[in-house]
Length: 115
Image (cartoon, rainbow, N blue to C red; front, side, top):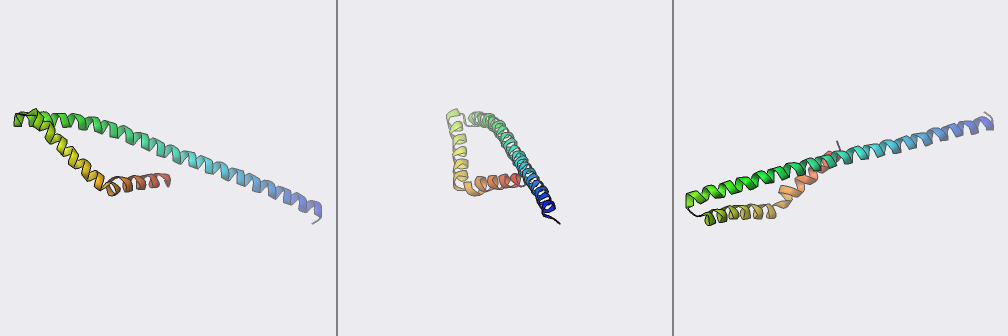
């Protein structure tokens, strides 16, 4: 091979390598966009479900308090009992937040990123 052929071959190889690197970068960008879109849509869906569940829980709590108010003949006591139930639930969640909230959320996000 003479020097011109070597230079031409090296130039073509450089072009192929450059094209390959550009294609890999584009694929990586598209993969990251897809993964972040999946995570974002999952977060939006989860927030929507949580909001609906909280509204349901609010109505359920009022219903329970009114029911207990009829049974105990004291709406003040009934709403106080329902409040104490939520206080106990809140304390349990606070003291076990790592195992109840943090670890499952992190695990779900990591799984979503590797799908």
